[in-house]
Length: 307
Image (spheres, rainbow, N blue to C red):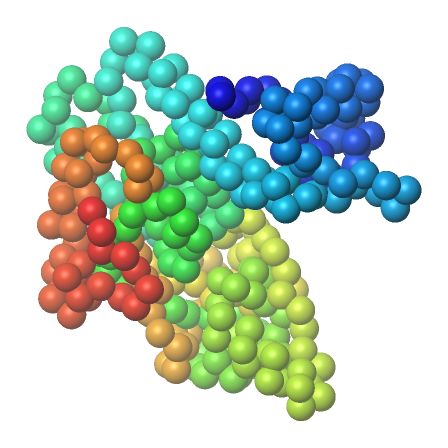
């Protein structure tokens, strides 16, 4: 049977909030309407999606599976819609994403030179959206910084670069030629702990020993992170190129000598078969494969070289 995307969106809202009233508010529809739509959806699918009782609303096993699959389905539908809108402009377009500090000029110019009728667009992404922008169709390929959720993606590694810690100029570590990750164990990290797993592990050990460890804090842009660093609110670990690109007089950086480098890859949706994607990936690999030790055939740990 065909899956009703409108009802699927209603389901995803209830699955997120696990409360029909809050989900209805988020969808800007009346709660009785939402309840009827969910019941109709369950009838169409011939499964129960939610378990409802006096304690509240919970996902059934079937509902949990649809929650997992539903996000990908809606992303694919949105991506197809975006590509249709781009095609309707009358000009062929190809969109390339990139993270702060990364330069995509070489392969973008090369692809444009090969296809004069193609409009090659670029989009700066953030840590939070570098994967989502691929899934929802805003971009066709992207230069991403690992680690990322690789589900549904194909990747080719490009290069690696050192990571540095950025601190205020008056910080105790300012002026150091190098620092250790253990030097940062009791610092307030201004990014998700998963973005710096080495810090997360050291901090966990420190807490186990009774140290007072500052929690990490989620900030969304490099500019925001650096503003907080400059005012003494914490530190941030960045790839060397990002720290260099955003150089400012009130912060300084030092290489971290006992953690691995940041890995950069080009990524695209694994299910898409597009000759332009294949061509751009080949151009990106040719542009950045300057060292056989870090080139795509060497492949950093955990990175698929499929595609």
